Picture 1 (cartoon, rainbow, N blue to C red):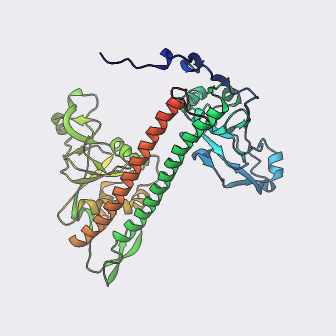
Picture 2: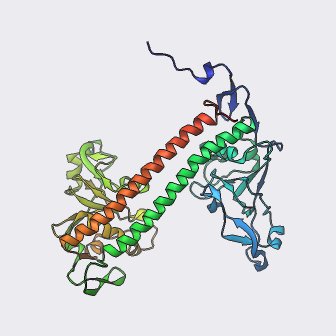
Picture 3: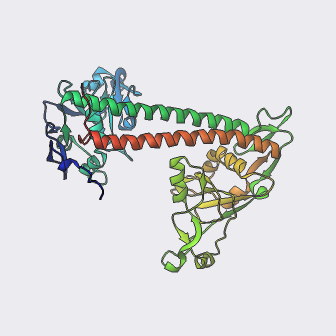
Length: 440
């Protein structure tokens, strides 16, 4: 018989407390505090000086917008106001080493927390907990609130509703002795710093890839003689020995369709059916290859709309709405819906080179999609776009260099994911006292 796992509720030295909608167990020597207690924190929010008054702006006082809160440490902000602007608004000075929180805003801003490493002011979409450092470690408070992101979003309510100072005061957190708070914060900060360093490596690698791709797909440094050709919105220099063709000359270019969604006989089959959702999720994760889809369709579904199976390998990219330009290499035969354009290259051009060239000219492709509420790149426009065709040897050189950079990106992104998983596990254990730390 396996040995029973000793859970906190069965361990000596733990007590049950109510924090938010659920009860949890914390060490008996910990307390629970509400964040409307001035002994630990004071709450404030920002304000915006009148934008029509010039003398309120361009001063020496840092002034942040809610969009600046998407970084862990606020070390500088672009906005600046004057003393007059501060006095004429609710933009109070927030001391350094406070905890900032998005009260509302687009996307994930609402409920997102950060710490300010400089003294600053903020607009009305930013709230702040000004910490009594003799009672509470501001980093511990940051991690406690970061762990409560879903709860903070729920407190704010849906739609355009947001957080306010009253709601911020209703938040409860476990409260260890101050030395233990500091040790917990030290551990989690170390992981955070590793994540930040990995982020910086990822961004530098992306910049390197962008610069290399821009040079390589046009053959910079590949030849002694060059010619000027029109590619996309501008003239570029490519090796004189390279040809220029249209996409329809070097690849079968297809757009898919959607079987009638009300017919269950069309879905759940064995045919991979790629949609923009499949590519969007990959793009966000930094992945390059796709070999499966969320939904599959039956042979009857294929026949109902005359959808073609695109042979592998192929390059697919999203061609509709605001997701235009997300690309992937499909390694299996697949159908697509009407939001995907697929390229199955001929022997003249490699799938990897085609993938990199598409990404290089994606800004131009997005520009020709139009500015309507539902922009879309037409199949005709794509087929008529020009593409340089290097020699096979040059294509292999280009692919080998860019693939090495891609491999580095994948490695660093995997490292970041592992660190984020480590951080989530540590937060769950340390912020509840499930695992105690030596605070000496």
